[in-house]
Length: 288
Ligand code: FVH
Image (cartoon, rainbow, N blue to C red; front, side):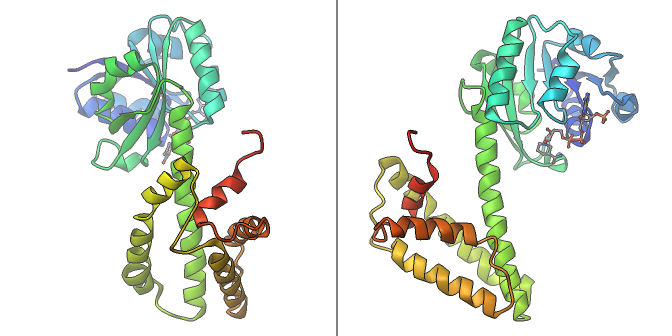
Protein backbone atom coordinates (compact mmCIF):
# COMPACT_ATOMS: atom_id res chain seq x y z
CA UNK A 1 0.00 0.00 0.00
CA UNK A 2 1.44 3.34 -0.99
CA UNK A 3 1.96 5.99 1.71
CA UNK A 4 2.90 9.65 2.04
CA UNK A 5 6.43 9.64 3.43
CA UNK A 6 8.86 12.50 4.02
CA UNK A 7 12.62 12.10 4.05
CA UNK A 8 14.78 14.68 5.82
CA UNK A 9 18.43 14.50 4.82
CA UNK A 10 19.54 13.57 1.31
CA UNK A 11 23.13 12.60 1.81
CA UNK A 12 24.29 9.30 0.35
CA UNK A 13 22.04 7.20 2.59
CA UNK A 14 19.02 9.54 2.73
CA UNK A 15 18.99 9.75 -1.08
CA UNK A 16 19.13 5.95 -1.37
CA UNK A 17 16.21 5.65 1.07
CA UNK A 18 14.09 8.26 -0.74
CA UNK A 19 14.90 6.65 -4.08
CA UNK A 20 13.80 3.21 -2.82
CA UNK A 21 10.52 4.64 -1.52
CA UNK A 22 9.83 6.32 -4.87
CA UNK A 23 10.62 3.10 -6.73
CA UNK A 24 8.19 1.24 -4.46
CA UNK A 25 5.44 3.70 -5.45
CA UNK A 26 5.18 5.87 -2.34
CA UNK A 27 4.43 9.61 -2.49
CA UNK A 28 7.70 11.02 -1.23
CA UNK A 29 8.42 14.54 0.00
CA UNK A 30 12.08 15.41 0.43
CA UNK A 31 14.07 18.13 2.19
CA UNK A 32 17.80 18.69 2.41
CA UNK A 33 19.85 21.57 3.83
CA UNK A 34 21.66 21.84 0.49
CA UNK A 35 18.61 21.92 -1.81
CA UNK A 36 20.38 20.78 -5.01
CA UNK A 37 20.75 17.25 -3.58
CA UNK A 38 16.99 16.87 -4.00
CA UNK A 39 17.14 17.47 -7.78
CA UNK A 40 17.57 13.83 -8.95
CA UNK A 41 14.76 12.70 -6.63
CA UNK A 42 12.43 15.48 -7.78
CA UNK A 43 13.20 14.43 -11.35
CA UNK A 44 11.99 10.92 -10.37
CA UNK A 45 8.73 12.25 -8.92
CA UNK A 46 9.49 13.38 -5.36
CA UNK A 47 8.00 16.61 -4.03
CA UNK A 48 10.53 19.19 -2.85
CA UNK A 49 9.77 20.80 0.52
CA UNK A 50 11.15 24.30 1.00
CA UNK A 51 11.57 23.82 4.75
CA UNK A 52 11.70 20.92 7.23
CA UNK A 53 8.33 22.16 8.59
CA UNK A 54 6.78 21.77 5.14
CA UNK A 55 8.20 18.23 4.85
CA UNK A 56 6.90 17.20 8.29
CA UNK A 57 3.49 18.67 7.47
CA UNK A 58 3.31 16.59 4.27
CA UNK A 59 3.42 13.05 5.71
CA UNK A 60 2.39 10.93 8.70
CA UNK A 61 5.76 9.10 8.47
CA UNK A 62 8.89 11.24 8.58
CA UNK A 63 12.25 9.56 8.06
CA UNK A 64 15.31 11.47 9.25
CA UNK A 65 18.72 10.40 7.97
CA UNK A 66 21.16 13.10 8.94
CA UNK A 67 24.76 13.38 10.00
CA UNK A 68 24.17 13.05 13.76
CA UNK A 69 21.57 13.65 16.50
CA UNK A 70 22.41 17.36 17.01
CA UNK A 71 21.59 17.89 13.32
CA UNK A 72 18.28 16.02 13.80
CA UNK A 73 17.29 18.50 16.55
CA UNK A 74 18.37 21.44 14.39
CA UNK A 75 16.20 20.22 11.55
CA UNK A 76 13.13 19.30 13.63
CA UNK A 77 13.15 22.18 16.11
CA UNK A 78 10.81 24.52 14.18
CA UNK A 79 8.43 21.87 12.91
CA UNK A 80 5.06 20.77 14.18
CA UNK A 81 5.47 17.10 15.03
CA UNK A 82 2.09 16.33 16.59
CA UNK A 83 0.54 13.12 15.24
CA UNK A 84 3.60 12.17 13.21
CA UNK A 85 5.82 9.08 13.41
CA UNK A 86 9.47 10.07 13.40
CA UNK A 87 11.71 7.24 12.18
CA UNK A 88 15.20 8.42 12.97
CA UNK A 89 17.70 6.40 10.94
CA UNK A 90 20.62 8.61 11.93
CA UNK A 91 23.47 6.71 13.59
CA UNK A 92 23.86 7.48 17.28
CA UNK A 93 24.29 6.16 20.79
CA UNK A 94 21.54 4.40 22.81
CA UNK A 95 21.34 7.35 25.23
CA UNK A 96 20.87 9.77 22.33
CA UNK A 97 18.01 7.63 20.98
CA UNK A 98 16.25 7.57 24.38
CA UNK A 99 16.62 11.33 24.70
CA UNK A 100 15.31 11.87 21.17
CA UNK A 101 12.30 9.61 21.88
CA UNK A 102 11.37 11.76 24.92
CA UNK A 103 11.91 14.99 22.97
CA UNK A 104 9.63 13.75 20.17
CA UNK A 105 7.00 12.43 22.64
CA UNK A 106 6.88 15.85 24.37
CA UNK A 107 5.88 17.25 20.98
CA UNK A 108 3.03 14.75 20.53
CA UNK A 109 4.69 12.36 18.08
CA UNK A 110 5.71 8.70 18.11
CA UNK A 111 9.35 7.71 17.77
CA UNK A 112 11.18 4.77 16.31
CA UNK A 113 14.92 4.65 16.09
CA UNK A 114 16.63 2.74 13.31
CA UNK A 115 20.05 1.19 12.90
CA UNK A 116 20.89 0.70 9.24
CA UNK A 117 22.93 -2.45 8.64
CA UNK A 118 23.70 -1.64 5.01
CA UNK A 119 25.55 0.79 2.80
CA UNK A 120 23.61 2.96 0.34
CA UNK A 121 23.88 0.66 -2.71
CA UNK A 122 22.45 -2.24 -0.65
CA UNK A 123 19.21 -0.39 0.14
CA UNK A 124 16.10 -2.20 -1.17
CA UNK A 125 18.24 -5.22 -2.07
CA UNK A 126 18.32 -8.65 -0.40
CA UNK A 127 20.72 -8.67 2.55
CA UNK A 128 19.95 -5.13 3.71
CA UNK A 129 18.64 -4.98 7.26
CA UNK A 130 17.36 -2.13 9.42
CA UNK A 131 16.92 -2.63 13.17
CA UNK A 132 14.06 -0.66 14.75
CA UNK A 133 13.21 0.08 18.37
CA UNK A 134 10.78 2.37 20.15
CA UNK A 135 7.03 2.64 19.63
CA UNK A 136 5.70 -0.77 18.57
CA UNK A 137 2.35 0.60 17.30
CA UNK A 138 4.19 3.16 15.17
CA UNK A 139 6.49 0.46 13.77
CA UNK A 140 3.54 -1.84 13.04
CA UNK A 141 1.65 0.98 11.30
CA UNK A 142 4.49 1.60 8.85
CA UNK A 143 6.21 -1.78 8.70
CA UNK A 144 5.15 -2.44 5.10
CA UNK A 145 6.62 0.84 3.87
CA UNK A 146 9.77 0.34 5.94
CA UNK A 147 10.15 -3.08 4.29
CA UNK A 148 10.64 -1.24 0.99
CA UNK A 149 13.95 0.07 2.36
CA UNK A 150 15.40 -3.14 3.82
CA UNK A 151 14.28 -6.07 5.94
CA UNK A 152 12.80 -4.35 9.01
CA UNK A 153 13.60 -6.07 12.34
CA UNK A 154 11.83 -4.72 15.46
CA UNK A 155 14.04 -5.28 18.53
CA UNK A 156 12.12 -3.75 21.42
CA UNK A 157 10.31 -0.85 23.08
CA UNK A 158 13.50 0.70 24.48
CA UNK A 159 14.40 3.26 21.79
CA UNK A 160 18.08 2.71 22.61
CA UNK A 161 18.00 -0.97 21.64
CA UNK A 162 18.37 -0.57 17.85
CA UNK A 163 21.44 1.70 18.14
CA UNK A 164 22.88 -0.58 20.83
CA UNK A 165 22.55 -3.66 18.61
CA UNK A 166 23.84 -1.66 15.65
CA UNK A 167 26.96 -0.79 17.68
CA UNK A 168 27.28 -4.41 18.85
CA UNK A 169 27.22 -5.62 15.25
CA UNK A 170 29.80 -3.01 14.25
CA UNK A 171 31.93 -4.15 17.20
CA UNK A 172 31.86 -7.74 15.92
CA UNK A 173 32.81 -6.44 12.48
CA UNK A 174 35.74 -4.35 13.77
CA UNK A 175 37.03 -7.32 15.78
CA UNK A 176 36.90 -9.51 12.69
CA UNK A 177 38.62 -6.83 10.60
CA UNK A 178 41.33 -6.40 13.25
CA UNK A 179 41.98 -10.15 13.12
CA UNK A 180 42.06 -10.08 9.33
CA UNK A 181 44.52 -7.17 9.21
CA UNK A 182 46.91 -8.77 11.71
CA UNK A 183 46.72 -12.11 9.86
CA UNK A 184 47.28 -10.31 6.55
CA UNK A 185 50.35 -8.48 7.93
CA UNK A 186 51.81 -11.79 9.11
CA UNK A 187 51.08 -13.58 5.83
CA UNK A 188 52.45 -10.80 3.62
CA UNK A 189 55.57 -10.52 5.83
CA UNK A 190 56.36 -14.04 4.60
CA UNK A 191 55.42 -13.10 1.00
CA UNK A 192 52.65 -15.75 0.91
CA UNK A 193 49.84 -14.82 -1.55
CA UNK A 194 47.27 -13.03 0.61
CA UNK A 195 44.20 -13.51 -1.60
CA UNK A 196 44.79 -17.24 -1.75
CA UNK A 197 45.34 -17.39 2.03
CA UNK A 198 42.16 -15.38 2.60
CA UNK A 199 39.93 -17.43 0.32
CA UNK A 200 41.19 -20.93 0.92
CA UNK A 201 42.34 -20.85 4.55
CA UNK A 202 41.13 -17.86 6.55
CA UNK A 203 37.47 -17.62 5.52
CA UNK A 204 36.68 -21.33 6.06
CA UNK A 205 38.48 -21.13 9.43
CA UNK A 206 36.53 -18.02 10.46
CA UNK A 207 33.26 -19.64 9.42
CA UNK A 208 34.10 -22.70 11.52
CA UNK A 209 35.01 -20.61 14.57
CA UNK A 210 31.95 -18.34 14.14
CA UNK A 211 29.81 -21.46 14.38
CA UNK A 212 31.04 -21.88 17.98
CA UNK A 213 29.68 -18.52 19.07
CA UNK A 214 26.07 -19.53 19.81
CA UNK A 215 27.45 -22.06 22.35
CA UNK A 216 29.58 -19.28 23.86
CA UNK A 217 26.51 -17.06 24.03
CA UNK A 218 24.69 -19.80 25.97
CA UNK A 219 27.60 -20.11 28.38
CA UNK A 220 27.73 -16.38 28.94
CA UNK A 221 23.98 -16.21 29.56
CA UNK A 222 24.33 -19.08 32.05
CA UNK A 223 27.44 -17.55 33.69
CA UNK A 224 29.19 -20.89 33.14
CA UNK A 225 32.68 -20.59 31.67
CA UNK A 226 33.67 -24.20 32.19
CA UNK A 227 35.47 -25.71 29.17
CA UNK A 228 36.83 -29.04 28.10
CA UNK A 229 38.08 -27.67 24.78
CA UNK A 230 40.60 -24.86 25.14
CA UNK A 231 41.16 -23.14 28.44
CA UNK A 232 42.52 -19.66 29.11
CA UNK A 233 45.96 -20.88 30.15
CA UNK A 234 46.42 -22.62 26.78
CA UNK A 235 45.24 -19.45 25.05
CA UNK A 236 47.56 -17.29 27.20
CA UNK A 237 50.54 -19.36 26.04
CA UNK A 238 49.18 -19.34 22.49
CA UNK A 239 48.94 -15.54 22.41
CA UNK A 240 52.43 -15.16 23.83
CA UNK A 241 53.69 -17.40 21.06
CA UNK A 242 51.72 -15.39 18.50
CA UNK A 243 53.05 -12.06 19.72
CA UNK A 244 56.66 -13.33 19.68
CA UNK A 245 56.19 -14.74 16.18
CA UNK A 246 54.81 -11.39 14.98
CA UNK A 247 57.85 -9.56 16.35
CA UNK A 248 60.24 -12.07 14.77
CA UNK A 249 58.52 -11.45 11.43
CA UNK A 250 58.85 -7.67 11.86
CA UNK A 251 55.09 -7.17 12.32
CA UNK A 252 53.48 -5.20 15.16
CA UNK A 253 50.77 -7.15 17.03
CA UNK A 254 49.07 -3.92 18.14
CA UNK A 255 45.51 -4.99 17.31
CA UNK A 256 45.95 -8.27 19.17
CA UNK A 257 47.60 -6.93 22.31
CA UNK A 258 44.39 -5.73 24.04
CA UNK A 259 43.06 -9.31 23.93
CA UNK A 260 46.34 -10.60 25.37
CA UNK A 261 46.11 -8.04 28.18
CA UNK A 262 42.65 -9.26 29.18
CA UNK A 263 43.68 -12.93 29.02
CA UNK A 264 46.73 -12.18 31.21
CA UNK A 265 44.48 -10.31 33.66
CA UNK A 266 42.01 -13.19 33.93
CA UNK A 267 44.65 -15.91 34.30
CA UNK A 268 46.46 -13.80 36.92
CA UNK A 269 43.26 -14.09 38.99
CA UNK A 270 43.74 -17.88 38.98
CA UNK A 271 41.03 -18.48 36.38
CA UNK A 272 43.20 -20.08 33.71
CA UNK A 273 41.01 -23.21 33.82
CA UNK A 274 38.05 -21.31 32.36
CA UNK A 275 37.22 -21.08 28.67
CA UNK A 276 37.70 -17.94 26.60
CA UNK A 277 34.07 -16.95 27.24
CA UNK A 278 35.16 -16.07 30.81
CA UNK A 279 36.96 -13.00 29.47
CA UNK A 280 33.59 -11.27 29.31
CA UNK A 281 33.63 -10.99 33.12
CA UNK A 282 36.71 -8.74 32.82
CA UNK A 283 34.76 -6.37 30.54
CA UNK A 284 31.91 -5.57 32.90
CA UNK A 285 32.25 -2.63 35.25
CA UNK A 286 32.04 -3.59 38.89
CA UNK A 287 28.57 -3.05 40.36
CA UNK A 288 26.85 -3.91 37.08
N1 FVH B 1 26.58 5.89 4.23
C1 FVH B 1 26.65 4.73 4.89
O1 FVH B 1 27.16 3.75 4.39
C2 FVH B 1 26.15 4.59 6.32
C3 FVH B 1 25.51 3.26 6.58
C4 FVH B 1 24.99 3.10 7.98
C5 FVH B 1 24.19 4.30 8.42
N2 FVH B 1 24.83 5.55 8.09
C6 FVH B 1 24.28 6.71 8.77
O2 FVH B 1 23.32 7.41 7.99
C7 FVH B 1 23.37 8.80 8.32
C8 FVH B 1 23.56 9.60 7.05
O3 FVH B 1 24.70 9.13 6.38
P1 FVH B 1 25.04 9.56 4.90
O4 FVH B 1 25.90 8.50 4.33
O5 FVH B 1 23.82 9.91 4.15
O6 FVH B 1 25.93 10.85 5.18
P2 FVH B 1 26.21 12.12 4.27
O7 FVH B 1 26.22 11.72 2.83
O8 FVH B 1 27.42 12.76 4.82
O9 FVH B 1 24.95 13.06 4.50
C9 FVH B 1 24.75 13.75 5.71
C10 FVH B 1 23.42 14.45 5.67
O10 FVH B 1 23.24 15.21 6.86
C11 FVH B 1 22.94 16.58 6.48
N3 FVH B 1 23.37 17.46 7.55
C12 FVH B 1 24.55 17.46 8.20
N4 FVH B 1 24.57 18.41 9.15
C13 FVH B 1 23.38 19.05 9.09
C14 FVH B 1 22.80 20.12 9.81
N5 FVH B 1 23.43 20.72 10.80
N6 FVH B 1 21.56 20.52 9.47
C15 FVH B 1 20.88 19.89 8.46
N7 FVH B 1 21.37 18.87 7.73
C16 FVH B 1 22.62 18.44 8.05
C17 FVH B 1 23.66 16.75 5.18
O11 FVH B 1 23.13 17.91 4.53
P3 FVH B 1 23.97 18.66 3.37
O12 FVH B 1 25.43 18.65 3.82
O13 FVH B 1 23.76 17.85 2.14
O14 FVH B 1 23.41 20.01 3.31
C18 FVH B 1 23.32 15.44 4.49
O15 FVH B 1 22.00 15.46 4.01
C19 FVH B 1 24.55 8.99 9.28
O16 FVH B 1 24.07 9.03 10.59
C20 FVH B 1 25.37 7.74 9.05
O17 FVH B 1 26.15 7.37 10.17
C21 FVH B 1 25.22 5.71 6.71
